[in-house]
Image (cartoon, rainbow over all chains, first blue to last red):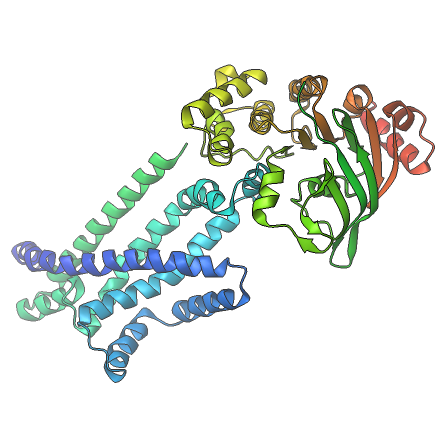
Length: 215
Length: 257
């Protein structure tokens, strides 16, 4: 029989663990946005070397599963003599992985802008930096919003993978909870509810931003 | 009377890979006059026009604005970005697809260059933008975003955006080709006003009526070559060259009904 009390009681410990889910995905996306912007700048740069670097960065990080990247990072860092907390390593790995997708999202949005948009600015003598900040980026950011929200939601779900390197986030906490209560169905249903709640909030915020940005 | 630039195009060649888009173009554009570039699609009219403000880089020859070469300090030696931008400030351009910035209102579109390029304070830029929009008959549309304007209105905003910068030369790249027929007139009217004020204008167009009535000279291009430059009546009514005759025949057949 489905035990409603166990289901409800699971929310307490899982909500505590959700802090780490939010931390890993929140910091991960923040890092991903910054690195993604830099990689995107490389991909669009005039230097062939930088473009090559961006292409390799993106294809490696998109081509290798996040779980394998996490394990690589987990076992690689001690070998090269770097000792940082598992949580920091997890955030960095998630951020780096997200940067590959985010840089592609931005490259796509910028590429989708008609060339006439910057030509009109060039024609009146606007400087390249000003064209970026005033003409290209404001439009590219708005265009990329739906894809960015999508990426953020994927990231929240992918953060369950960091349980493999010992972070007590929602998925790992529910495994532990299921093992102690012998009620896996109730516990995992509660976990599902927590992920769903987080992602519905994100989707809502995304829609609100899109609405606000629309002219 | 505005201060008007002259343009001198000498032996200009332009290649896209192995394809030669412009071959040895020579053309004098006198100050304060309207020059129309006509010819079939793909003949190089727009490419030549875009060489005048160096949006398109010509490979050899010279384009001189008031005697100063644009794009190069010397043949083969590119001019600095700063110097090029300085020269472009004096050249307005209007595009076939308007190219208004969709995230800004009509007034912001016009004020943007005044603020970011000319460095005017925001309030002054806003009032000059309003002035320019009044001039093109859009005083009541200043707060609208481009998406809320008709094609003709958008193109008039684009003209306002160019003239607000107080250029001495205006380039028009098929300014009415993307417009519904009933909206063409309002844009041509604004262009006629500019011409009557003594602006130097170079206009790539398929509007033979405009070329016939407003242009001081008409240049006919085909396959990257300048076939003839002459008074509009000579080109449009008594063309000697068979290529021009054939082009005009096609044009008249298309417009006959």
